[in-house]
Length: 178
Image (tube, rainbow, N blue to C red):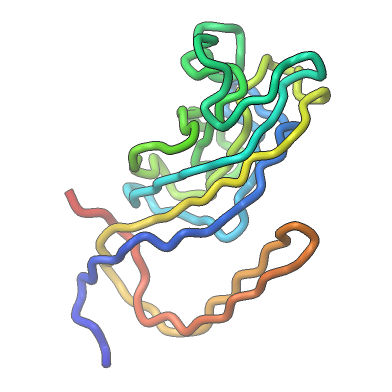
């Protein structure tokens, strides 16, 4: 059965491990590239996360919302708490603005085509002493404006194993509804 287009799609969650020591910079560089993610401009993205990390050996452990009350510091994203999960959609070498994610975020439109990059908010250049990791799940949804047929192959290492998914595609989410 071939669906009529546009097709309203629901979230397709994919999980990724974000190391607390993955460096990021205030000018929109760095971050852990989330395998299997590619978004088109305007496509809706939502991220949820769990886990614990430390931004220094003497710091307490905290979750993806970071240390409460620590906004306004000289961190990669001053509007986010120290240790909070932050993200951006990047199309390669071009710097893009970081956004607050924390334990969960409301959906946001991808500002440009690219992949999802995630990091823990820390002082610029201070990532080498971080420890722990966050498990982040992301989903994308929107309205399709085109269709493709073929095979999609997705492979990602998770906790020492590799999960491979093969699927036949009959449509692809490439836009958004408002």
